[in-house]
Length: 540
Image 1 (cartoon, rainbow, N blue to C red):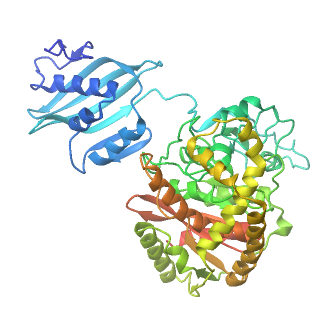
Image 2: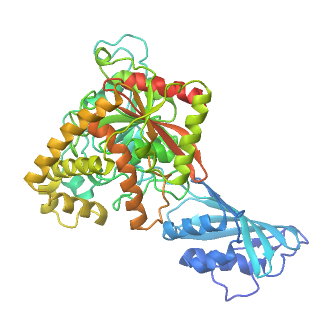
Image 3: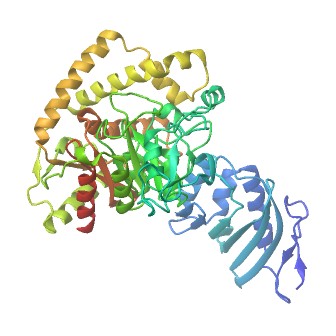
């Protein structure tokens, strides 16, 4: 099989051998275009990369993270990526399809080690050669540091049958399951980092394991590892300046949602079956919605927060993320006190003011889903309800949360200037300005709001979107992210104010990706709420 090389020796990165079948010649200009692409990739020349990928909505680029469809989506992904990992091309195989198209397969050697492979379908267009379809296979790290702070195989093994206190000789209900533990829960022998490198560096290994983790271990699960979180869990975006942004496999190039971002991505990627997280202002429901997962925020206080690094104790709750409802139910049953659980009535309400907070795509998908469920006979008694001034409810939640967050973390933050990323630092800076009188007034308003929401719902189940939009792109500007955050928190704060359980069900489908249908039920109806969610999912 003869070799051919680029005829222009001045083209960078053209040192690897190029192979074609015997007697076959590469189409004119193709090899040079390939090396132009490689040069642009290694120098992050975005304009050249845009030029060398075919225009239009049908261009494809896939990798282990998923498939990007359309030139604009691919271009946006490159902007957010900030450059490709450096590599060397080892060899190139070319198989012409016809005079104006060819398949190229390149073997690559990342500078970090290992081998990769890149497959491209090139087409000759009016302005020259361009890639129409590309698939990239890279040497993946053993542990993605944006998802996991530390992981094992597993990190903490499941107890043998019969070893847990009072356990029988049969396997526990969570046998075979693995847990991604958010980096807020204490694990004996490991230090809690809270998503902040300096905080982790100064911490000490825990002397005991948090009760929420222990409950899953006692039920037979293993701890796969400690998963990342937004800094001190004070965000719903899922971006961390110290460790990076975990991938969102449901929407390639989008943020994963937070602050339970690591556990959510670990579950969505299939690297764990249960994500143990927390939800203060939506930190389970938002990543569940963005990544097409089941996610439960529990009744306030129903799962012990012993051994948990707090953010705002008035709203902090424990919960789980899973890919399916039976696993979520098993995790909940293993963790809550059954005698405190109640069975919920199948009566439903919608608050139009909340639905209006969702963007057009999510609101449309929400209404269409409710129409389908009504046709299935599951929402026969659905009525509208008024919960009050949503902006005032959100401001009450925001002030109390901010005051408690500053009281918890403010002294450490003041002693460590520059330790936090800009977004979270600004949020804490605002929280530091809340005076005692403002907090006192907000706490009084919070008590009134909790009672009014409970009275308005009247033990019925509230239906609403889990988030105001699908997952935003990682390249969205700060103003767009903040607008999305503001709308979503107005949706998610209702359960926090009322201290009620809330379940995100992956039922809404939009052109931009999955979104969650959220159901909020009376306190201590956690397991029953999952049962209702399963009934609704079966009706779609």
